[in-house]
Amino acid sequence: MNNTLIKVLLADDHSIVRAGLRRIIEESGDMSVVAEAADGKEAIAKTHKTSPDVAVIDISMPGLDGLEVIDQLQDYYPKLPILVLTMHEEGQYMVRAVEAGAMGYITKKSAPEQLVKAIRKLMQGQRYLTEEAAEALALRVVRGKKNETPIDSLSLRELQVLRRLAQGHTNREIADAYGISIKTVDTYRFRILKKLDLRNNAELSRFAIQNHLIEP
Image (tube, rainbow, N blue to C red; front, side):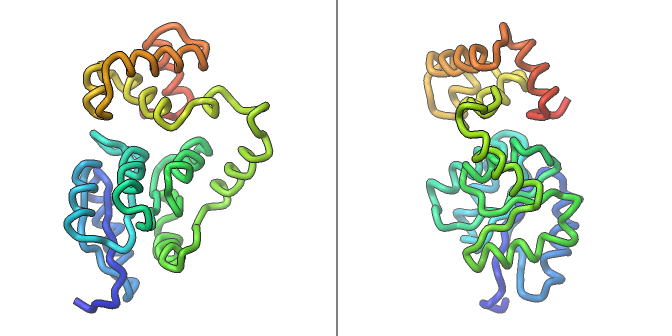
C-alpha cells in the first residue's frame, strides 16, 4: 500500500452504506479504508488496531452511539480528526457532535459530493461543516444561555442518558455502559425530567422521538 494514502476508518451499522462509502473514498486516489466497524465498540477497537488518519463515524449505531464513540476517541486520540456522517439533519445533533470533538459533520445524502472533500479538509487541520451545521452553531452562540431550548440545557452526558432511557435501557445497563453507579443514573434521570418538564420514561420516550433524538 502507498504510505502516502490517507488512512480512513469507517463506522456505520449498515454494510451497504459502508460499501458505498468505501467506493467513494477509494476512488479518490489518495485515500484508503483501513478498517470498517459495524458498531461503536468495534470502531474504538479498530482505531486502536489500525491507527487511522481520519475516522468517519455514524451517530446512530447499536451499543455505543456515535456521540459516545467521539467522546471516547477524543480521550484516547485527541488529535484524531473525526468526521460525523449521519442521516440526522437536525441542528441539535450537529452542535452536539462538534461539542463532543468532531471536526466535521455531513449528512449521508450529501456524501457523494462532500465526503472526499471533507476528509481532505480535516487532514489539513480545518473543520468541515455543512451550511446547516454552521447555521446551527451560529444560532446557538447568538441565542446564548438566556434563550436556550430545553434540549440545549442538557449536558452531553444527560443527552446520552436521555437517549438510552428513551430506547428502553435499564438504569443498570446505562450505569454499566458509562462506568457509573445506578444512583448516578437516577440523578441524571431526575435532572433530565426536571429540565424537560416531563414526568416519566414514557413521556421521555415520546419527547425523544418527537425531537428526532431517537428513531421511532
